[in-house]
Amino acid sequence: MKKSTRDEKQFYLNRSIFCRELSPEIIANLAAISDFVTFPDTTIVSRAEDGYTDVLFVASGLLRVSISSSSGRRVTILLVKAGECYNLLSPYLNHPRILEAQAIETTRCLRVRAEDFIPFVEKYPSTIVNLLRIIGLAFDSSCSRIMDFMEKNVENRIMRVLSTLHSKFGSPLFFTSVEISEIAGTTPESTLR
Image (cartoon, rainbow, N blue to C red; front, side, top):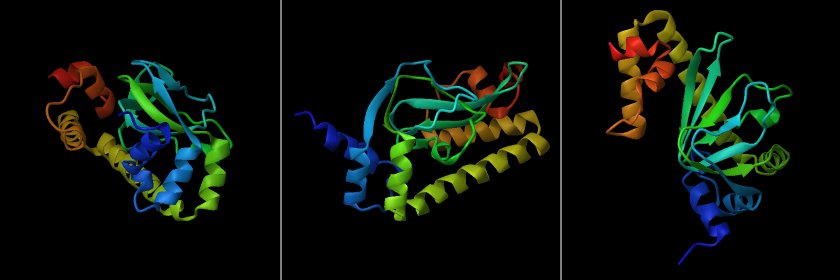
């Protein structure tokens, strides 16, 4: 028997890091302001500077969040898998972000519009702890990656990327040399060596 949309939404939100330790009532209210959206493989979810402000809770699939240079070189900042969130900060910013998000496989998300997300967080201040925890972990991870770019040679960066991907996704890893190079901040040729 197929779950109702409300039950299905709550099922996926219960798996989300954002909803950890939140009451069933809060999760039900978040489900009520969300809707399902599916991004086919290779779909651009948001472009740099486009002002995208929806918050996405990934139910299945995978989003790549990256930044591109003017020369066209791309560095993957984050891979967002089921149970993780994308774009938690954008509803609070008064300017577009420099990040781009793309579905790298068919990805189903619960979407909450910024105009609904901000009042929700204000109504339920207990969500702020999870919001800050997620942002803090992302900030620490970004700082660690910057230090890697500054201090580690390519081989060590690639080894760290592979180790991180393994701990996040398990075995086997289904990433191309191009995708690994974009995460490690190097070229596909260096990755293959």
